[in-house]
Length: 181
Image (cartoon, rainbow, N blue to C red; front, side):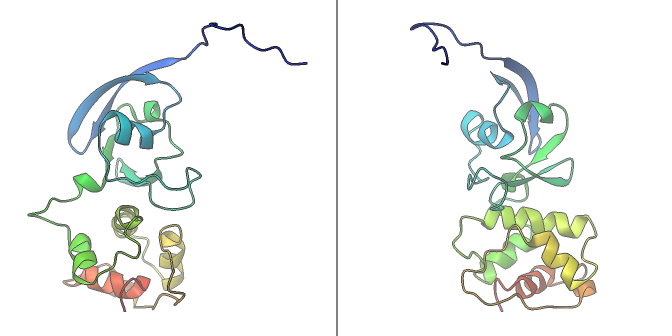
């Protein structure tokens, strides 16, 4: 038989104090040590660009960068990010100065349902900065958690070297992923 806590009993909650560096700003926080980075961004800092999807790390909606590397913000504790720079979709560009990948999503209607779009853009940026656009198979694997093929058509392939250089990079990325053919 399991014992139940007495009515009115206080349950211990471990607090963590840390500073999140997000999109160029610094945000001191004191919060439950179990709070995920995703929840800290959305609920504590009001940065709603990163979407909450499955809470299991499989949907791609929650992708952010920590010191330039993509991570799953729903599976990372916020306190683990005390020190490194966190970049969300809100730190990539703004309405007057979009990143070429963001421009391409707009130009080519690459939103799918729209919910995964921030994570798709963050993963696309990481893929390019990591230099992981070696072969079409590597690109597909690197983006597999972010591409929802609701239309059922497989992504088209372009030469990897076209994906990583020159003008029109966003358009080629969109064409390759099948988000817009």
